[in-house]
Length: 377
Image (cartoon, rainbow, N blue to C red; front, side, top):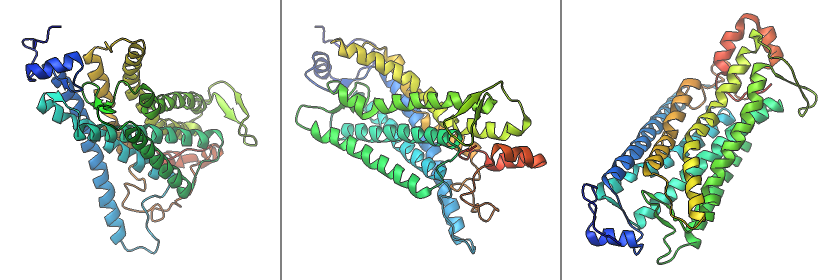
């Protein structure tokens, strides 16, 4: 085997390190100049998402301080509806995912990806953030679907808080369980894969069960919930108010009175919709790699495809921040006033279809006030 370092490759490893990488005696990976460029782009996408998420948290903290100091006869609270809890969970997970991506800058500077404590930390942080982003997005899709299809959205902050808390605990246990059970000298559970640190190639089951099954589940559920809700927003599906499982299919209803409901249903589905667009390229690339590895062959997915997919995926936090800032500017997380002070009850449900027909000239105002809230019919 030729262990000479290729000329003009940009590899800064020593000949001994490069030879150890080629013959498999070392778990470390030497980066070429092209690898470093691709990894830099991926880390910059993560940095952009991290800055966007930090900006969101700054607004939340600023408004929370303002409301806590504001004189009011009513008790102020940050979480005024379940969606606020889901959004906070989503952005905490986005922050962890972005931090894991930014950690790639260490490998760019070193010119190689080394196994060790920093490598393990990157793998754990990335997995914790990415899985929670997936599951929280899944919850948003399910909450939206239940609110529209069953006509009885989940309005309890306590139930939503408990669900989100259980999710975080279970994901943390899953991540720690994989790291503990596969801990040992030479095992390399969290190792270079090869451009950053994640679950190693020999642990395919942990890769799938510990992360990708949640990606694919969220992808499938988001698509499955989007299709009927999109048809409902067009007026092709009409629900039976007496029995939630009964519905009829009809020609599209272009009534102006349904405009607000359509906007609400589609806006809430933008979160899982954007997630699908971001995770699909990475899922395709990873799945091809898994198939190659399972067949006893090496992963021959072009590095350019890997870097492109992970860079797109790294924009998750930035996309969610933009979506939240544009669709929920008056939510409990962002408004300087409680919904009580603005004339709304925190638990008041969105307008029902029949109410839109009776609201007359107030439809446009109601649309803006309900924009980005969990819909119900």
